Length: 371
Image (cartoon, rainbow, N blue to C red):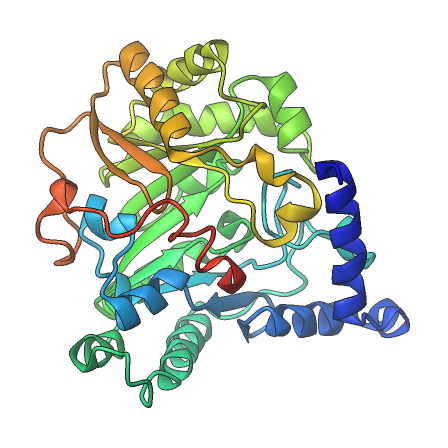
């Protein structure tokens, strides 16, 4: 069976498993959508936020294996909370994204606008409460390191990413402030489509990620499928203001085999890096998980060796040396710094921390069913 046929067959099977009540969806689409997300192990907070256990949290607690953000930046994997303040909403309908979209399940909703705006204090409290509820299931697990679990019950970091576009939540700056006041560091991950929001943050995150998959407008329109006007131009504007941030910045380049991994692509991405001057560049493989499996074949997910080879091209064209990599996550780190800015006490060996497990033991493969 071809990859295309497999994707189509998989879509039919998924719709059958979901057992969507389309009549109910016409009356209240969010009620049905949140029910779908709950089946996918999302914990809904309020009207538009969610938290979900990261597969690396599970790996840390049960196997003592830690994520690449621990290795690269010092994040204590087991103490990290993965959340989104806009779980179903974005201004892009990216082909590779695992976010649920109307065409994936046959339910219509406005993907570009949050239906209501929840109080950031309530979101922060709800997210941390749900994280503790998630971890409570590990208390009786004999494989769990008790000391790590005890630490995990006192989170130290929040990744404001997960799915959706966090910059669409208009009180994001307040949410970041609240997390910081509670003693947590923050990573903010964005598709870079709201430079106005970023430029007006009252408080910067501990680290800012901008994620790119395209280096020109033609590729952007095809791969990222903008749902609002001028998004490519706004993305470039975001890169222009990136040097003004005092926090560390990361340009993440998500690579998809057969789509954006040629020598010409490396040259295009290198020009964007030159414009943005980020602290770090992450070159990371597209992962064939979630709703993206309905749009892309498994063969679009590059092997780690292919990611490394492409990262080497970007390194040669930008002058950013390769300083570390994570084979399980199929990601390579380039840095303008000789020494990392550590944002936590995790992985004390830093960039030299040895990987445990091969590329089938990370986001894809062993833990893919948890994403």
